[in-house]
Image (cartoon, rainbow, N blue to C red; front, side):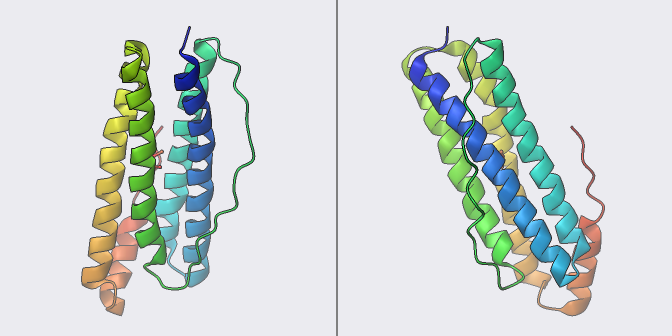
Length: 165
Ligand code: OFO
């Protein structure tokens, strides 16, 4: 039986991961309209990964006999004007999600819920990777993105990303 507080936090996290997917779809949509299909591809795949994260938590709660409740997903509220806006917001968002995962981990640790801590280990590592990817995307854009030829190459590189579940 999962601790109520830990389980409730995990349940809320499903919504946060779904929101992340929605936010990244919004970023992909922005880049599609700007003609940058590589950046759009990157964020479309990112959105799918976020859905996977949500489904992983949903499954974990179901496997532990918790009655999941789904709630409204907020509208993505970032105003996107400049080409690097999604990159900046994306990094901020990943840092925020890392703090959410750590809060759940803390709650699990407090009640010695080793099963949930082990389950969350994957999410802790994943957040490390996601923050690194978001930082790299932003750094590369800041270094090269203001020159059209370099932006063309950066965008092309990002078309190569494929989705693996
Ligand atoms: Fe779910 O990893 Fe990003 O937010």
